[in-house]
Image (cartoon, rainbow, N blue to C red; front, side, top):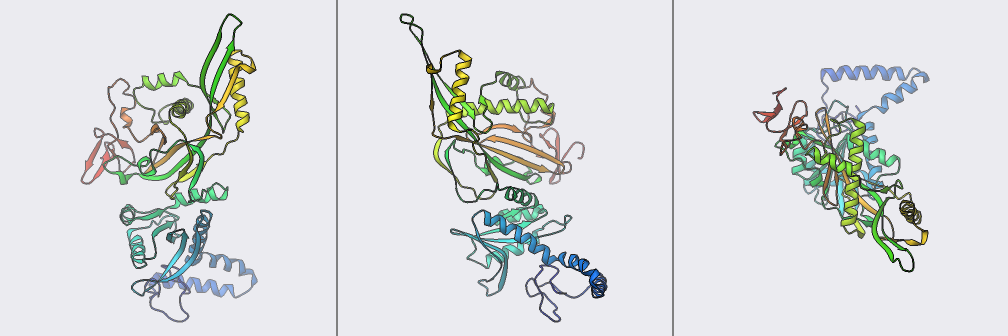
Length: 449
């Protein structure tokens, strides 16, 4: 045996009873003996000729050690792209004089981050034991300021609770795939400060946006949190029309907003406001309306609120966003130059009001586009996936599929609707207190209670 089956560390030449790194017993069990015999038989076949060289390479590449290294290399590259300097398999002596190995040691400014990586099969999750062992290692290394545990699978609820209590960041397979994808297409944002020329301020942070106001919040998991930054141009428009020597003049002022990503000039849609008010609830679920209608309604509501926010909220220049790695950031760049945007707005007004070119004046509110921040949160529970969208400047909830009990969706004429109380721990459905029951310390819907 060349590598420890538990931690993947290389073992010394000769016979060893315990791994020097993790202390695992290396006594061979009956099942392990069978595996060793099989491994030996394969090794003997490898020696017979060159035709087995490819098989040999494939077998060796699937060791626990090599799989662990592959995960470490991926995680290391993600953190390098985010501005960290890194070292892998760093040996460090703790306060107890014990020798510890850190899979990845990442440093940036005053932050010293220790990262533990576990590349497991899909059926295995990280339990509390692994987190507890990592925590004891961190406690013995006072120079470490932050800890992160990374796996390609998932964490148990006990592991999540223990990690949260000890301020250890958890990085599961879903986050890993998301960041790897963003890195591969060049959209992975650095964890350093993001500075925007002009932006509406963020009044609701990540913790507030992802909070689950339930009696059993651990039954739901934040699968992904993303801050999307969309660019817009805001123009003050002035119309001066001279009607004649003795007929006076016509003066009008207004505000025009153009989406710098699509080139669309935003206008208020009254129908969406009427539909929203008629239903007596905020739009919260796409799954219960025809998909096409739901997308159109959500888009109209979002555009209307963006118009309100950009008119009412003053943008901040050189706005800084402290990106601490708990969420992804997608910043969309402007695809419409400001000169072209100004001309498009002016031509729209001239055509709509049948005016001359000189009678319309366009004044920029900012020297570049203004970013509007929006939270998009995905929440998983069993087989259910919920989406929450919030405009972060005005704290306007555009959609929250987990906010209200589905039995209340069609109660349009009730003076109030019942909010979600708990998540069914068997099916993942979110229900109000009327439609969910407590059984011992767990909650189940009527179907599964």
